[in-house]
Image (cartoon, rainbow, N blue to C red):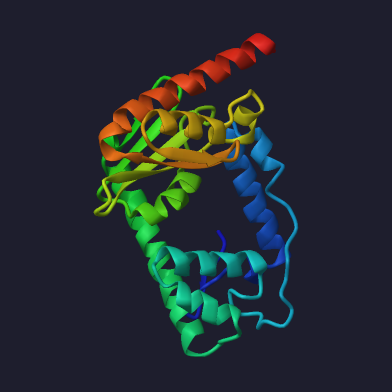
Length: 242
């Protein structure tokens, strides 16, 4: 396998040599193919943006990893730390940002383990999967959870929606994801989220493969039913056109 740590520090993609990158890419491609995600294999290799003025050993060197760090700061309610790092602070705020990133990763892993241990928390309907995060998953992290789970579903041809209650708001926050092959069949999650949410006194929208919504908690079951029906209709229409 590939060594994951050096001197108690986690290695990132930037730390791997060419042979390790080839092995990792091959393993990921084989995994995606085993899940039927043929199109996603083409997206494994892409552009890398290197911020040459940043130290090579930091997560700021790679623009994508920099973005992950900023995303973590925002989702963990520490946006000021991310702003300070963007403004050039490589001292106390940068150290704090790294701690936030580690905490964020632990939190995401905790939620994924919780979903895996509770079979009823992810349910397969006729046309979609639903993760019932309710009051356990932090609503600010549902997007991350849906992105991770959407590529490891038993049937990748079914879109996934994840929702969690917004504390004290009486609202559920919804995140939806699917793959490009489903979008190519006419399924536009942004349009579906908008249509279903508006019928449930909420609001929604987004892109074809990634979208979201906010819906009153008491209307979530109706919302889920509508999304399931709308996805099914779009898939049926796509077959007729094909």
